[in-house]
Figure 1 (cartoon, helix red, strand yellow):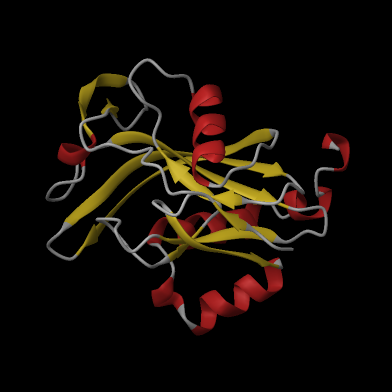
Figure 2: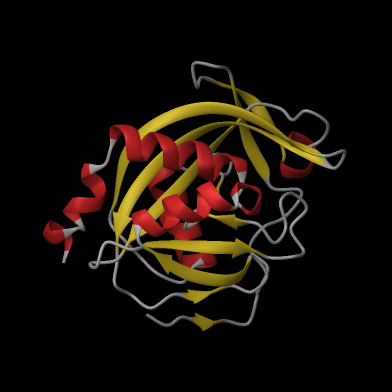
Length: 195
């Protein structure tokens, strides 16, 4: 499957207001995107999307080189944050369209909390909602967010993560391990009911 690149319009801003949460995912305030990623990070709400095509391959992306955290690393289909006052349903669809240029029905899988530092530059500290979806639309990805798209079978992704773990984002590795362990059925369903 091929993909297209769009003009790279900016869709993410350092001053956008993200949702701060406690470890039970209760809203406790708001903070700018730039500030939540400083130092060890402030715990905030986020989401990660795993979109498969009807052949069972996962769409993965290489993060743009201008990203502050983990530039040029391979990651899951799409990941971002709901903005202040934005529902997860709206945020996930907005970001999937803005970043990858596709739409997909999404189903919630699980939530988890993690913290990961990127050297002295900053960190992610997220309570992340993980979703799965299915689409055969051709990606038209945003070059300001994504530098490359690939489709990988689950088995090939397992092998690449095992052979070269350092080229993948930390959240992608954690989420993929849990999907493979607890939600392997999502790779067999392939969205038959969604086409």
